[in-house]
Structure formats: structure tokens, C-alpha cells
Image (tube, rainbow, N blue to C red; front, side):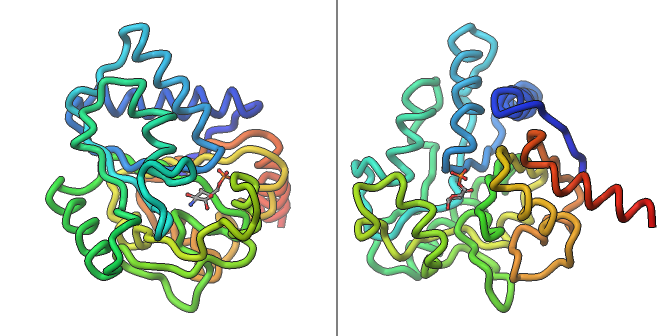
Length: 251
Ligand code: GLP
């Protein structure tokens, strides 16, 4: 794992956006794996600014999103399709017919998941997958479990995820209880992975995920096995990781 230390959220966002820009510049028709949540917002806003300045061109890029709430239509302002449209797609020159988010309105969950996996395969796989990190170590919506799920699947969200995400909804009762998410295998097959984290509330889980045992109880811990992972995180998010690492090295 390559660690890039950032000062704060803005610095993390700039550094992460630089890595994504490099990918788009080096391979203009690349496949970007995209994530939602509050962490990537600053990254996306840098990409939008650089596009507006003429430094970036998304016209040949395709994108695949990690996950979507089951039961939320694309025009619901809490759906991940809506999030992506508002916070990135509508503001850059990406061809939106080549942006793929799992179809939250497909009632047949097997079909919704198969369709998403087929799209990833037809695109030839993901060149760069951006990831945030849930407080319990989830990536996408792969929640702690007894085994690592492989392809796209339907998950029951844990109470801690429902509570964490309720801040975006009018009330906790409105948070969907299920989601379609890319599986761990789909994420691990990405050629490069960029994981971003900011803030003290992520400190404990970063230390666990990157220094603890690889276990499906901490889904992000599988990233220790990926050959090309970059973690961009700020000082607050790295505090426990750096402390634990120096203790381990001293022993
Ligand atoms: C959600 C998303 C994840 C995201 C996580 C962390 O559950 N499904 O993809 O990484 O939240 O969110 P945040 O970046 O807001 O901390």
C-alpha cells in the first residue's frame, strides 16, 4: 500500500483528484470506479474545476459506481445516481450514457446485480477504483460479514451504517435498509485502487483495516492484498495508524 499523507480535508481532496486526473490524462478512455459519501465531494469539486479550466477531458471516460440504495429512483435526491449527477456528471463533459450506477429500481435483485457485473466485464474492468471507508470498515456497501462477497449483490445495511447515513435524510426511518453493491471481488479486480479518508472518526478503522488481520469482519482489510492501493488520508484520519505502525516497528 502506498500512503500519501495529507494535511487536512482540502489537501486530501486535491491529492486524490490529482491521481484521478493523471489516470484520465494517461488513458483518456479509462474506466473510473466511483464512490459516493461525503469524503469524495472535495475530490469531485477539484476535478470539476480542472475540467472547467480546460485541463481535463472526460469525453471518452466511462464510469461505474460502487453501489445504490435499493428502492430509490434516480431522481430521488438521496439516490447515488442523483448524487453522481449533481456532484460530478452534470458538471463535466462525461457522456452520461456511459456512466453506470446499479439500478436501485430493479425489483429483481439478481438481475440488478448481474446487469452491473456484466457492464463491468463488458467495459473490460475498472482502471482506477475510488473508495471511501465506512466507520465499520465497509467499502461500497460491503458490510462486515463471515465471508468476503464476490460480485455485485444485495445487502441488508447494518444499523451503524443506517445511523451514519441518516444525516443525509429527513429522518432515520427514510434511510433504505437495503442496497445493491459491487462485491469485494469486483473491487479487488480493479487495476488500481485509491482509498480516501479524512477526520478523526476514521482513525480507528484505518488502523484496523491496514494494520490488523485481513478479515471479512473488516471488509477494507482485504485491500492489504491488492497490488496497487494508494491511501490518501489526512493527519486526523492517520493518527492511530501512524502511532500503531511506529510502535510495531519499534518492537
Ligand atoms: C456510504 C457509502 C460508501 C462510503 C461510506 C463512507 O455508506 N456507501 O461508499 O464510503 O458511506 O461515507 P463518508 O465518506 O460520508 O464517510
